[in-house]
Amino acid sequence: MAPEHLASRLRAAAERLDGVCAELVAATPEALDRCAGRLESACQELAEISPASVGDSAATLAAARQFHAKIRRTRRLLDGIWRFHERWGQMLGAQTGGYLAGGKAALTPGGSRLSWSG
Image 1 (cartoon, rainbow, N blue to C red):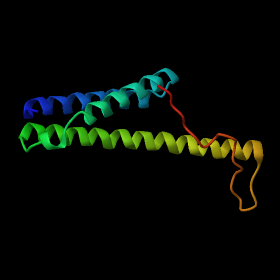
Image 2 (cartoon, one colour):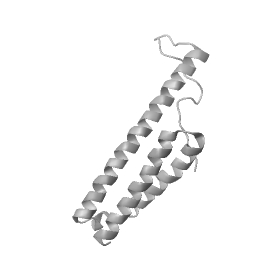
Image 3 (cartoon, one colour):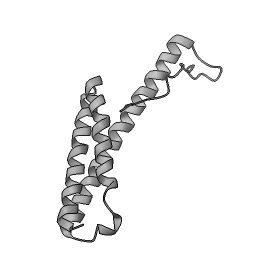
Image 4 (cartoon, rainbow, N blue to C red):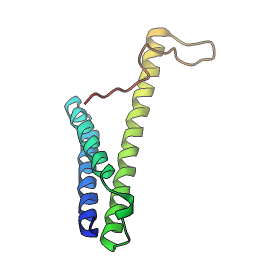
């Protein structure tokens, strides 16, 4: 794969991640539904890139750095969403099931899982 084409694909994947981040920040049910497809598309774009074709062109390295920065931002947002849902589940467990002997909130059935379907 030519370095210019590779850089272009990395930039396209980074743009998809920008869309994912915007959807995660919006945090509406519709936005989160769209987010899953965009994230899958970005991952598929990355999976189609052969590691042997990366090379060391300046454009490719810059695009790879940009993509890596977008990955880190996406991960921080997903981690934040996970923590939010985990804490919400703990509060719900405490409200509905009380507390366990050690002082932790009781678990709610299915409350510790975030599930997306595409």
